[in-house]
Image 1: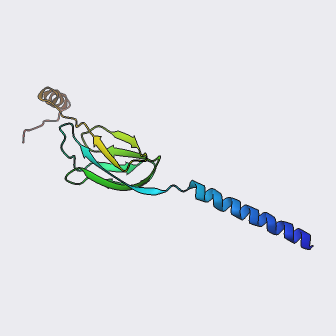
Image 2: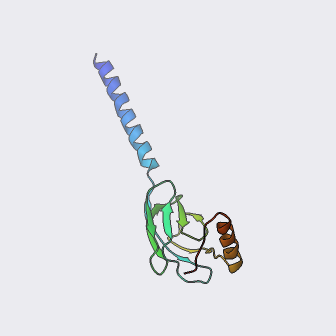
Image 3: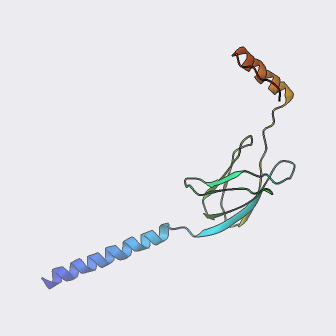
Length: 128
């Protein structure tokens, strides 16, 4: 009776230690990742959403294009904004990143084409 109890106690201890060490291995160490998002002219890009892929953690760049976010090595940062290219980078051992994002600009020829297509569909665009 005592030997069965002793063996079951040892199995319980082994499983408890084994499960707790696997949880420790799965947790990633978080670090603060900083950086600046620039446009192609070298100016700070404000309003860019910086998000960690697969999570709900995100931040937005300030007026100068600076951002700060807690992430772990191996995470993927996604840079998103309206009218600009979508960009992803992997977090490595460095703490600061400089990201250059190209903005989409519509030239006059493209604007005329869009207005013509809208008029064909019955939508009239009046200038501001």
